[in-house]
Image 1 (tube, rainbow, N blue to C red):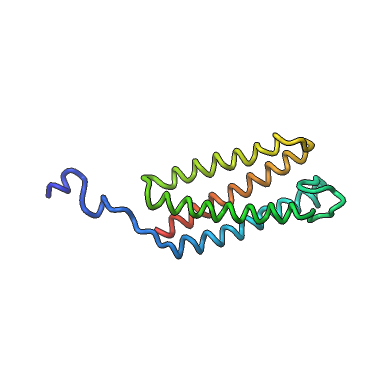
Image 2 (cartoon, rainbow, N blue to C red):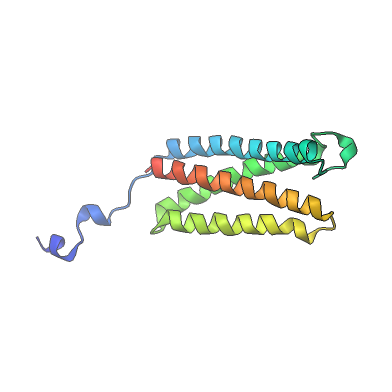
Length: 150
């Protein structure tokens, strides 16, 4: 009876259980989506808008090895973000709030970073836009996956 009066009970103080298989399966799927967002972003800007991000225009719509590195990096960042949400779910109060802030700020840094380079302004904006879409994809997908895995 005392536990009910104070608002604490054995069940309310325990953490929700995380299903790691659901979480990591969703994380791998998010990595695939993040890589595809990066690829589509590069193709859209290079092919449709004729903005040669990551490689000179002469390298065609795909670009060069930098495009492959970019796609793989986006996928790797999604895997790292999956580890982050897993740790937050296990250790912090309001893990989705912290996850949102961390991913939001990391995305902002990724959007601003191209402006520190010597690339033309159109390439800076294009790379920043693709980075924004990658960040949104990772955040929104892993936020949903995290909710479904508890």
